[in-house]
Length: 219
Image (tube, rainbow, N blue to C red; front, side, top):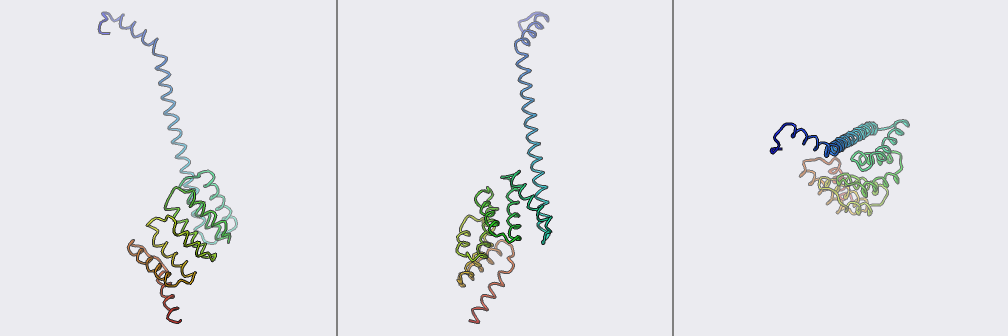
């Protein structure tokens, strides 16, 4: 352009360049704009899904925290839990919904369904903490079903350190169910120590130790 001597020559050069490159430039701009629109639409869709999942989980949490549920409330809670799993599978809310679904099954007396749900979380969830919670709850159900040995095996699985006090507590319950009082006492003492180190409280553990001591004294 610097070699051109007149404005007419410059204008003609611009026209030629536009004729040769203008269509491609417009197509490229359109593609870029479409990409931005698609990305923004996807982001909006994902945000909408997350908000819907959050709302459903909050409704489910509110229902299950009421204690004794009416038949209609119970049906609604089961519907919400199913929707979370079906429409938001793999999300945090789906995993939390499954934990609450297991609680509903326990309240129904359907311990088999509760156990299957908890095993599903252990097998499929990508969240170590929720897997740990599921293991603890499964172990409690196994103890209640006189399967204390299975409970001890369940507790050997991966459980985060933040749940180590609860694991020791339940391990004590399993040993006690097996008549292994010394091991039960050791596990409960460990649970109290871990809870104290973590600045937490474990209600009922000291009472179990006291009752065990009283039983041994009486015998």
